[in-house]
Length: 164
Image (cartoon, rainbow, N blue to C red; front, side, top):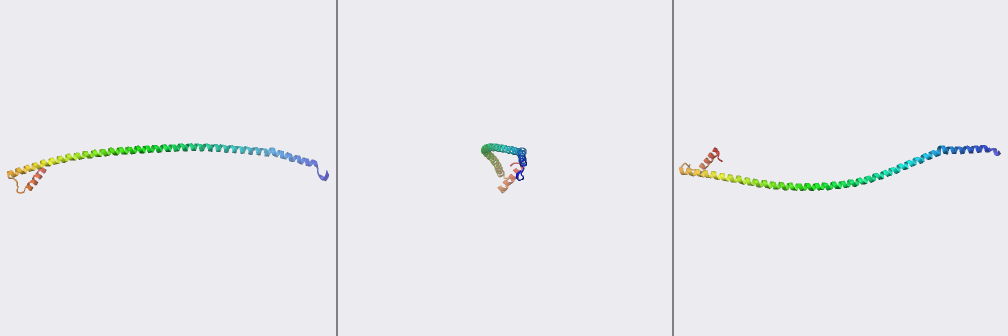
């Protein structure tokens, strides 16, 4: 042992250090490395599944957007067709109403003309009767001095008796 160095002790310490490193490697490093690799694989798998799900969701969204656009286009076409149909119905009903209004006005004019004719003929008859009565009175000498007064009196008597 030169210089107080014991090679056996050094070899034993060296052997202990090697055992310590091998033990730590087997007990700590390998399980931690295995755990980290497993965890890394788990997150990589999770990331790939997430990306795949995101791609599927985007594809579905694009398909739904296309369907929605087609549905909106179809709705717009149906709305336009309905508006056209409503316009046609409005026009048809307006024309029918105008025709009916013309018929009503024509019927009213015809009825008014008939009533006017009846009134005129009735007035002619009344006037003829009054003239006849006045002429009889004048011929019979019953007339007063004023023919207008006689006419008014006869008209009032006719009204009182129910003649119009």
